[in-house]
Length: 210
Image (cartoon, rainbow, N blue to C red; front, side, top):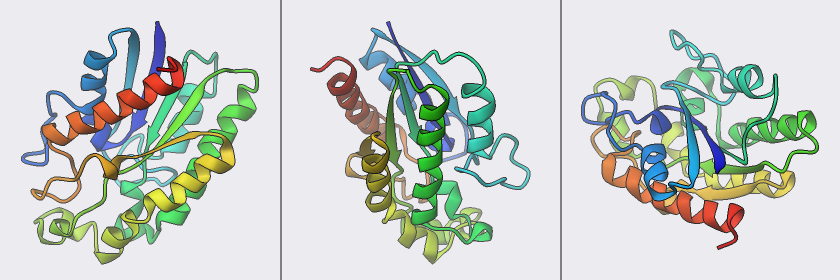
């Protein structure tokens, strides 16, 4: 059985754009249904960024968590899927897509440095775009601005280049799914399913050569 890690933020955890609850059927859950021959390990945390400490959000610094949990012991994964970047675009970080891609390069290079003989494949997934409806949301409009909307549309450009440079695989989530207009940041159940199907297809190509 192939063991796959899904490492991400609230769009991996399954934040419901309607009320903030946990969705039934987030994309790792659907992925498990689509690929019963795989053991899907979920590690999605609301507020997680690539390398920033989000105020009042434990375990938000993705790189720190990744090092502690997955670079400090024995590698147990056939594939690691990383989808991060949305929280890098919070107003108080003043960051952008290029910085996210640089940080993700660190994930790949550090993993390959620690586990130089591993056959583990790494799939970098650029997040869905932040839509302009976020600018009208009562909560998220205070956290994300015009820059976040603009920079999220550049994720694929920079993250795909990082994948090429590091020998990782790449998938653009925005080609298959969208953030809900309810909050402009999070996917609804239908789009989680769309993303899961795209990821499953990629996994079959990479791990099973289908």
